[in-house]
Each structure stands twice: as structure tokens, then as C-alpha cells.
Image (cartoon, rainbow, N blue to C red; front, side):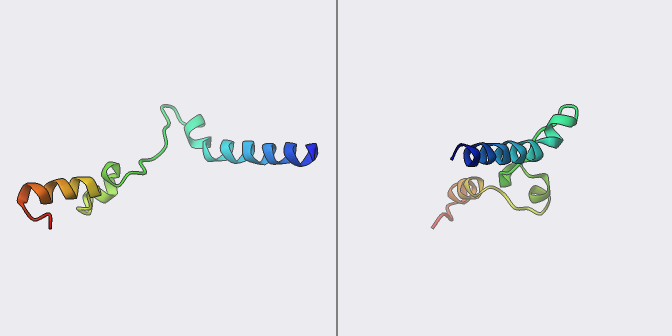
Amino acid sequence: MVETLLLTVLIIAISIFMLSIRVIIKKNGRFSAHDVGESKAMRERGINCTLEQDKESRMKGKAF
């Protein structure tokens, strides 16, 4: 039981470390934007956040 618990904690710790390698190693490193509104590639394609699209539609009177 204890061995399984330790193995699980070790696997989780290794996974977290591997996911954050870029953030740890790179100077001023950070995770990439996950929100559509913050993604530069999405903005270049003209895709906005759902909340922003809803707000624009309401201002234009075309929400429904």
C-alpha cells in the first residue's frame, strides 16, 4: 500500500516537473495562453473569446 502511494506521488511529481521544464529553465518563462482571447494566433485569425463575441453582438443589437 505504501509502495503504491509513493510510486503514485513520484509519477505525479515527475509529470509536473516535465510539464513545467520550459517555465523553470527559460528566463522569464511562463505558460502559454490557454484562453482564446489571449492567444495571438487566434486573434490573427479573427477568432475572439466567446464573451467578447457576445458583448459585440449585444452592442450591435444582434444577440438573438
